[in-house]
Image (cartoon, rainbow, N blue to C red; front, side, top):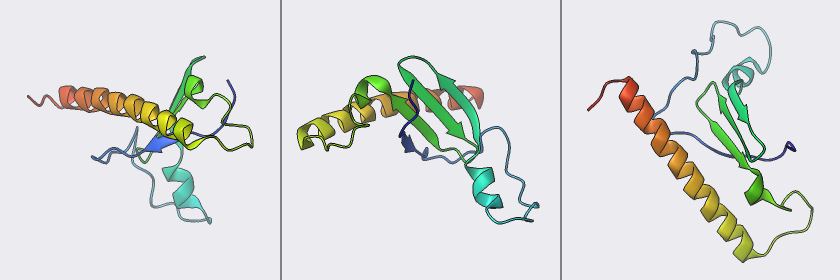
Length: 109
C-alpha cells in the first residue's frame, strides 16, 4: 500500500489514546507536538489503513476511494463530492462502533 494522505477527525468526546502525554519534559522545541501526534495504534490491510494518535486523532485511508487522487491532475467536482460522501459514510460507521465500544467498556446502559 502506498503512503499518502489520510482523512482524519477528532471524536466529539476527547480522549488520550494509551497514556497522557508527559508535560514535564519541555527541554526541546517541538516537544508538545511530538507527543500529541505520536501514533499509538496502526492497522494496515490491502484495502485500508487506520492510525490513532495519542491526542485522539483518528486517521483513515481507503485505497479504493483514493484511486488516481495521488496524481497531480485535479478531479471533477462531482467525483470529489462523491468520494467525500463515501469517506463520511466510513468515518461515521467507524465512529459509531468506537463510541459503542467505549460505552460498553464504561458499563453505561
